[in-house]
Image 1 (cartoon, one colour):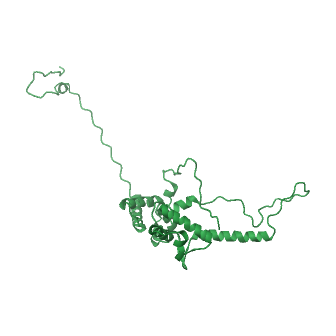
Image 2 (tube, one colour; image 1 turned 120 degrees about the horizontal axis):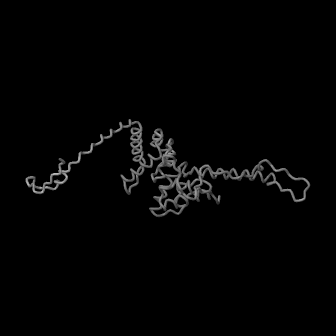
Amino acid sequence: MNYFKLHIGDYLRATAHLSLLEHGIYLRLMQVYYVEERAIPADRAARLIGARTPEELAALDAVLKDFFELHDGAWHQHRCEQELSAMAERVAHNREVGKRGGRPKKPKAGDSGSAEKPAENPPGFSREPEPNPIHKPIANNQEEERDSAGARPDEADGCATALDLSIALRRDGIESNPDDPRLIALAALAPSARTVRSACQTAKEAKPGERVPVGYVVKVIETLHAQAQQVGHRPAPPPRASPAPRRPEKFNPTAYVNRNRTNPEDDRDVIDVTPR
């Protein structure tokens, strides 16, 4: 197999936490997987991709544990297995079509009879391409969609499955696996994506420059979710009473004229303006 599809959006969301070295190793592993058309032997993984230095071997180990599963002495990747299976079906189908004569010939110009247009493509030939339900095109203005409350749709929805939680955590750089029993238990709470994002940011601030474990983030999510539930059921405080209006004081002309006097016994400058 000399070609495979790479959905850039899906790839970047799933590998946002990888370093540049780990990106190269992951892509190299997929290339070897498709060329060999089989799982990667565990005892030859480093040799097949050319990993030799301690840093490369450590990155290889991290990528294999994140995206591959070890079965019968070989590293298997679910998406690669799906693509190889689909390719094998296409090859077998095309071979069968070839035995039946291949694509039907078009009628020549000037023939009296015109072949009727078939209702659908002949067996063995692919139909017109359908839109990918996973990939959503982005508008040219690159503006994010938001609901009436100003929140993005992915932040307003709840993470009801361990896969949703794993995707949300990886989007913020937290390594996770949907098979983790802690994520499976957390999915029962269905925390919002906004809560998951806030928990990831809180965990990163608490452990700057460190690799944040998923168990630590799960505890923060549970705490934030509980706080959000308490706030949502807290009764609204009673309205505050407005203060009574102040009555204006009556103007005193004598006090106004003598307001700057410092010696009350000195009456030389006193001006009596009391009306008679």
